[in-house]
Length: 246
Image (cartoon, rainbow, N blue to C red; front, side, top):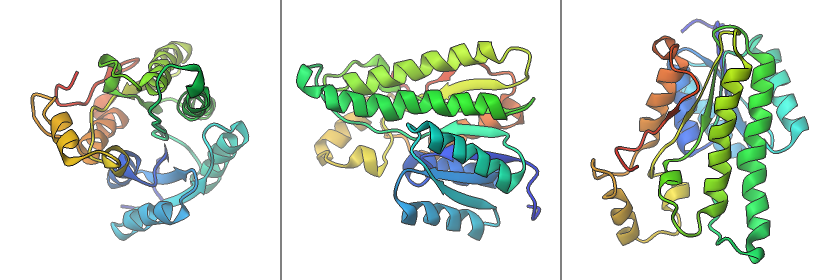
């Protein structure tokens, strides 16, 4: 890889789990990476160090995707660091379990702020900053198809993200920029595994015909396809990368 990469990618939520795997994969694909993170600087620096040790180039930028000033600053600093932005992956997200009840409004607002407002702000900045050949990729979820109890806020937020993706693809008509979503099924991340018993994890793993949990790399591979030369004719789509889960 050259010392000065000719293309760069922003990965929000890039400090851990799926976002970290995406950041590392896109770095291996030749992108200089901006690792956005909400608060855990140590995890973000861990991602940067892993990319640099593999010969890639990366920087970490803190910012809350739900805050318009933070998102604007993220894009400005990315351009300042690498001169251009070619790919934007919005992987930042939270998952809070809560029933559809008046008492859950606080949890609902928190999920919507990060997952849906955050996606709106990141997609808006991506639309304003990318040029021809740019790729915008948002993370959704395959659990939309399941309608499990207590997933209301999360499913509502991600269904909204899928709507934004399709609309933005149309708004960018004629500019040569693709906009897609990747919707993972259950993936064996720390976020997913936390609080679940081995029996629950095994049960969820068996739901897909391939009878295993996804890995962060499974999702990163799909993002790599959409961000790379072979994904250029895929636009306004939701790719459900889930082993047949839904």
